[in-house]
Length: 226
Image (cartoon, rainbow, N blue to C red; front, side, top):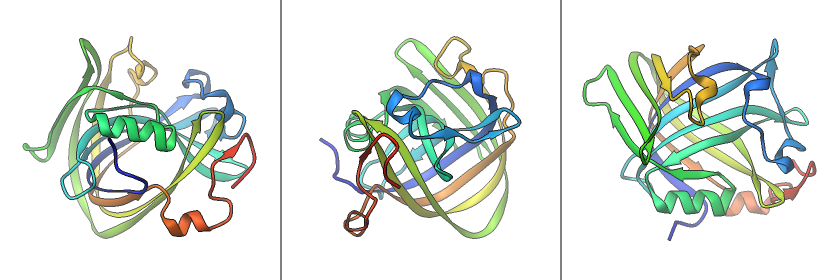
């Protein structure tokens, strides 16, 4: 029903970073909460929210809305996805079963035909989730490496998943309109401190055979592992 790990993906991402009071954050699953801590700046936590259009050329092509918290595990930075929606059953099932990513289904519009404006919205059934208007600005020369580790609760264990790739970058501004009564309501009324377009990216999501051969790459319980 879904491709095996790793997934090779291509597309466009429109990312905004918010600083949110720690008390307003969604609660992490207990096994993950015991292993990681949010990275705070004056009592606020960096939350990334992104619209993603995975395009043909990768193993799957679909659209996505997500929010994720920047955390650390014994000083090592991690990204933990708290809310995420996709319009692909294969992506939902693979994300949940392979990596513990709590994907749900939604309907999307991500209209980039009127560049430099990108108009995006998502709803789950009759319930609106969020919309955003992104204005693309300057393009930075060259292509840039992408690399981070996603930490999620998978059953009673913590799954740590490497993500690697390259992309172009454009500066941007973004006006987000999350539904105040919805799961992203904690972002309602907040302005992002940074917005970027991560353009024409390719990435490898998940562990390759070489990764699995290295010590410390396996799924582990609680606070153990690297």
